[in-house]
Image (cartoon, rainbow, N blue to C red; front, top):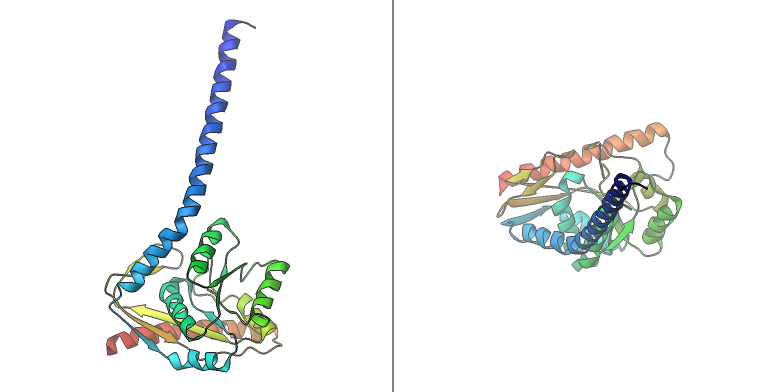
Length: 251
């Protein structure tokens, strides 16, 4: 082997070693981020909730009646409006709500699961649209056997925005648990350029949460009836958002 070939061989080994080193650093960075993210997200979330100036709930008696009846239910809200709908559900834990959240099986979902578990809720890994048989059994058993009320965003996790997908209606059919629509509005917010136009209330914003009438889903539905029910639930969620916005003007 001549000198040039030896030098090229050394350069190749050096490049490979650097690549391995970069890969290890990225791996450790991801691990550190996954460990730190749940605490950071929880801290930011609590800061947002606790700096709101006032919160009002319209239709709170509807959720309270379900709790008094001792039956699990399936809260649902648009992905855009997750923040204070989740906050309201966490408050209902004080009234005896056995709360769970459907969380994506992805790596990002693992972070969300840790956040929910840190506030006393249970995380069910799965998808309202693409869920494997085992995940579907876990969700069904959590509702039927454990009495868990599992919340989700029927247009999540990636849209289309404001489209009520059929997965949660099917789960309501299987479990017999009613759907409970929720929405919220605020008087000032930061809006993100995301697929759902997600918004975060600014500090000291006024908040109104709207709770809709529970919807019991029939055990049997034709494809036409399913589509009509999807449209009905989307209209309910949109109507609740309008109710919440109108109530802001009454404060």
